[in-house]
Image (cartoon, rainbow, N blue to C red; front, top):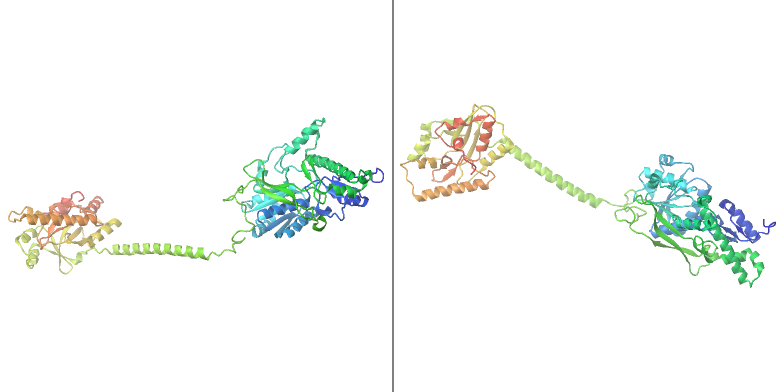
Length: 610
């Protein structure tokens, strides 16, 4: 074509694999070559490809720089690379690793799958464990981006690694026509099940990558010339757009070269001269403003897109605009002297608790090795030890309390009792210095017994039909009664039970009888001071019972107000009335027996709870 048709410029080729040979021939023949398709980094050296210009910004090295800028933007310095086998993937990974080294980004691990693997094969290989153990920021670089990212994200989704602790960045590398999104069906519908596996992924693509406005405007323009939408290959629309921009680039560069040469028409056959006029050229293209860099490559305009599981459309999170680098020499820097400036479009979108992006390494390291839990362990151990101590103390206290109750300090055995008749009782009373006629008179109304060696007591007898079973409340109450000490409370000595067909409730004997005896004794006359003293003693005794754990008397009557030898009233028969009622209902005792005796105290005189 060069020799036969006198071709003086070449637009293309369509296949990036053929560009290397075409660009070298163009350099040899000194004719400009303008590539409008995405290319690899193999053609970036302008000392070899002297007349090559690239109008597509989706070159591997450009996307690699965009990914690096995104990593720097979020402060990520440690990453993992996931790729597949094959020459194309290898070349792309090399381009990215070159940019990583320039920016000081560490590749903690590189995982490589076979090109034909599916998600099941990826999971079965166990290679995803390397990601969990070494990185939280993952870059997916594949030869077939659309297909392989789908398999990777499916495996990641199945293994539950696509949680907010991980960020999966997918550079949308393509060698031919623009692919549709993996979650878009042939009919244009969104496949939610596929889109869900891409949740929380970040795609780095052309700024118009997910914007249909550009495509819609292009279709409207060509429809004016009778071309219908159905007759256009939708996947190749971006190729058509870049082809138009390539033609416009060549035309503008040729005109500029012609004008700068003093209208010398022969200059347009000088490919190097035309190429020089493409450098730093700016014009309005079909895809927006076209800015050529110092190597006659289109200054890229990329964006990072976040895929949210809750939204149908992807979200543009970061915009990447090209800005010139001042005082830059492309021949020395080996670059186009343009840099990317990143601008946050949205913030706080990440599905973490605070909306912030994840760190490239957990605070405590990937295996918790960077955190010392000694303080937490010490605090936890102290708290646990304290809890155990409290529980042990409570258990020990209850055990000791239970043992004390089980010992039943209020239990009296029949073998320790010596029954005495009225004569013996009067004889015992006569030995005391406080013997009175009243004492002798009231002695016969009581049933007397000697407890132990010389403790003079009175008792109430109840017929016992079967063994009495004490509940915990009974044990506590009887123990409290046994421990009661007060000047106006008659000591409770205990109970004799479960040995014979009778139960005995024992109280200390008071030698001067009861208030009932005084009330009905016509020979006994006491002045008002005695009456007031009796009332005061009764009130004091009741006050003590009400404030104690016993809480009430339960059988208050004149019979239950005993008088000791010092003429002090002591309340007796207190606290036990409820227990007696329950034992009677259970069929263990018979209270009626007590009512038949002359002594009208205890059960026969029960009143409400005073």
